[in-house]
Image (cartoon, rainbow, N blue to C red):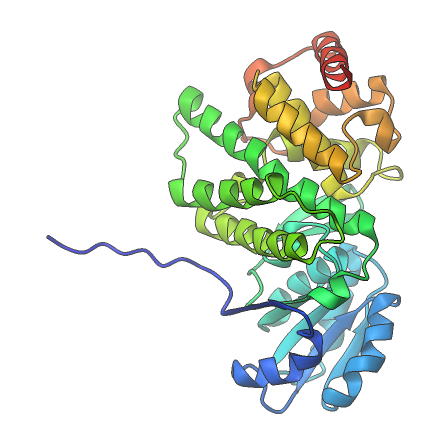
Length: 353
C-alpha cells in the first residue's frame, strides 16, 4: 500500500522568546538567509525608528526604509525603492501594517520576508494575505507568507495593551470562522480541510482557555504561537477560510462603510465572532467568547467601538458583499435589516444579563 504524505507550507523558522530582537543578525546568518547582512528593513516612523537605533550597529550592511502607512500605495512605493538594491532578504519590523506592507513589497521584488513583530495585534505575522488600505477602503491581497517569524517577548511586553488585546480577538474569532466553514460543508457541500481546522481551532482554544492577563508572559507566548498557527492553517487551506468567516465579513463591512471610524481589526472580528456565534445558536460558545473578550478589555457590543445599533445593522447586512462566494451564517440566514436589528437587540440583552 503506498504511503501518502502531505507537505505543510510553514515558516522555515519561528523564534518566540525574550531577547530575540538582539539576536536578529545571528538568526539571519544561522538560517542562511543573509550571512553578510545585505537586507532591506521596513520600519515605521514611530517604534520602528527607535528600534533602528538599537539594531543598526548589528546590521551595518542593511538599508532602512520608513513606511508611512499601511496603504497599497506605500507597499508599491517600497517595492520600487528596493529594486535599486541587491538584497538577500527583507525584514519587516513593526506591527501589522508594516508587516502587511512588507509582505506585499517583498512579493513584488521576489525577496523572502522575515516578519519581526513588535506587537501581536493580528495574525498577519504569518498569514498569506496583506490587508492594505486602497481607494475603495481596504483590500486583501494574496502574498507568500513570511519565511521566518521573530517575536521578542520583551518588546511585545512594551507594546500598547490595546494592540495585544486585539490579537486575542483575532485568534478567538477562529472558533467562529471554523464553525462557519463546517456550516458551509453541511449546507453547500464545500470541502473542509480538517488539518487546517484543527490548527486554527486549537489556536483559538489555547487563547480562549488561557487564564492569564495581558501582563502574563506565558499568555503572550501562547498568543504569539496561536497567531503563527493561524497563519499556517491558512497556508494549508490555500485561503483565509479557517480564520475568516462572518466575523471578518462584519469587520470588513465596518471598514468599507465607515473607513474613518474603524476600530482595531481584532476588536472588530472579536465582536463579529461573538455575534455570529449567537446567530448560529451556539450560546455556550457565545458566552465563552464574550467572557474572554471582556476579561481582556475588548468590546462585546457595537457601541463600545463607537457604532450605533443602526450602523452595526447596516454593516451586518452589507457584510456578505465583502466576500462574494463565501458561505457563512450570514449567507445562510439571509436576514433583512429588521431581522438583524432584532437579533442584535437579543444579543445585547443576552450578553448584558
